[in-house]
Length: 529
Image (cartoon, rainbow, N blue to C red):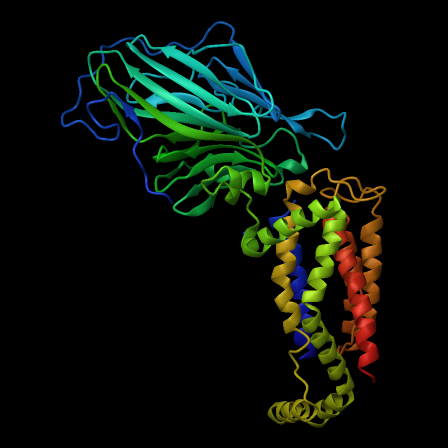
């Protein structure tokens, strides 16, 4: 049993290390698209194929200088391009690239394909290229606190139809409403789909902690779909069932397009000719009769992966905060962390409060665990005698050992099971602290100015290692001397592992160790040798 316990601890450490290595730095029914003044419903295919448009050259790309339009809100400054009526860049006013008030603000969208900015619009079935030229109704839209506003782009096709894109903004939201309108001024029905395009690099240019995780995310068929960038680059993927949103995201920020009244029929992920990842979001098929118009509505989100902000967007966008296998535990912990931050105004203190609460919750289990180990330590001399006496008869030895456990009312698993129960909680908290934008650039005290980054002077990891060593020495053991020496090396291993971990996670582990030492001292007084 001692060897099994020893192997279990070693395996747990290996699992933890592998987890930190690979997992760190686990529908609404489709509704109709609105169709204005159309004799044929927007999603209904015509009984007979409509006549093709007269052959004309495809829509020309913009050859002259692009004309930008700027939208300024209290939360961001967005720059839109006349090429495709697309979003060229969006600067977040409340987030900096580095942990300094003087550092540049975070700018999203600049790493997309230069020839296809985000939310460029193309069409399948009628001639509209994502490089088509649009004309904005203004060059600057400024939205003050509590205000609203719209920016409209128009494209007149040489085929005789008009496409209009209307972006709607509110002062207090990162969400943007997009209406894509098709006006059919031709003599024939138009049949096709609108496609909104997002692009993202296969490999980010900068090696920053922000890109510890990145790539395409979707919520389809009532589940989060996460594809690795390299997998999409090598093989096209398509989602067609119950798509609620599609996005490209990194660890802290994302750009997403959300369905509105079933406006997303499919999403195709692929690598384009320029070498960028491309997400093509297609609407249901439109049928627009001569003199009629159709509208496809989406909601856009370009901003931080703050769980409250994401949840406010609807469509289960908060699922983009992927916290791994133990999400069901991690998200309540994240909400609890934010709650205590609201009370004390410091995320480091909030982590300490959560650590104390968890220790109190698990106190009965850990108390039982340490008491069981202490009891096992007491009967160790008798165990050794039994092993020596029945060393050549394993069945007799096992029978004698079980009788010894029964006589002394000792459970050999009592010291292991309580610790196993706590493993999911630790991993959940690990993910919540590791991938929470709330801890990004959040200070604690003195030299720890960013709880999402490592301790710059390695003070807390070293203290954590020392407390782990003390805890190890105080823990009752039934292992042989060699195994005990190996176990005493674990604090050194953990110290080196935690040197590069976020200081918020190290703080949790350190406080947990200190509380465990106090608990062990208390138990040692209760359970006399």
